[in-house]
Amino acid sequence: RDWRYLQLARMADSDKKLNSALCIMRRMAPSTIENSLAGLCELAPDLTDDLLNNVDQPLKIESDSKAEKKFICCDYNRDGDSFRSPWSNTYFPPADADALLPSKYLRGLEEDANAIFDVYRKLYFEDGSYSSVYFFSIEGCEDPTKGFGACFLIHKDVKAASGSLKKGWWDSTHVFQVNKTRNDNYEYKLTSTVMISMVMEDETLGSCDLSGSMNKQKSETKAVKEKGSTSHLINMGTMIENMDHRIRAEIMEIYFSKTRQIIDGMRLSSGARNRQMDNIAASLKAALKASS
Image (cartoon, rainbow, N blue to C red; front, side, top):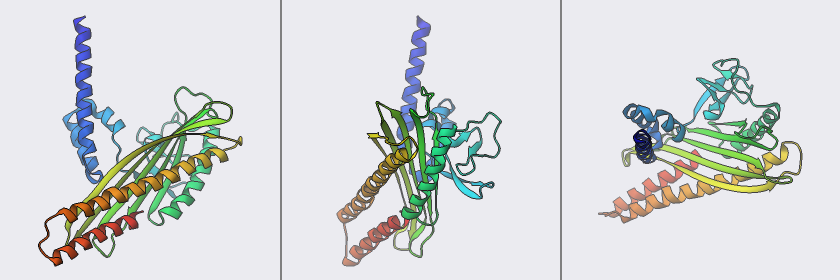
């Protein structure tokens, strides 16, 4: 009995430590999140797996030498230290023979989704951006036609401009869990995360790291009228586009309207100082437009 109480006490203590660590990570800027995460893992090695599974990190780009294209790395295309390319369905570097691959049905969805999402990327994010889509089986559902998961990723690097913007990046991750409910209806559960970082520097502004992240969830039930992949992709694509617009609007409100409000509330000593603050706000707004 004492042993059971001791185990429960240890579990409660571990949960408390994990919650504290996650609270710290939520307050860290995305531009420094990798260093912050490494430091926490060093301080609490027993929480390493939980932290790596729960903390969103900046997306990384790898090259597919077979298809001669770039792809984005994430947990959904990872097997050990290898990552699967959605373009050639090949792991880089080569993985073990038993590495996970999507079923024929999911691979068909994945190929169509990557072709469509690449067009979406070009229209909304233009040059310097990359996209990848991964489909995977979900636990407890053996028939992929009745349930599956999908991850839509976009990464954009913002080149240094002639103004104060030195570097920046935009990461958006849209994860779906799709389950058949009844008849031809499917429930689409979407979790979207956007991370943004902009480093600005000039004589007027000094050095400014404007970084942040946002997480949103949405669930909808939609009909799938066709047996092929078209209906699923239309349903998911519509939800992603609406979510992207919603997050962009909120980022504009939080980052720039709030920044302007704070600046306006500062004590200003002269008209020249007013103009200086106006220039700073205008530079931040132009940087966001360039990143999106």
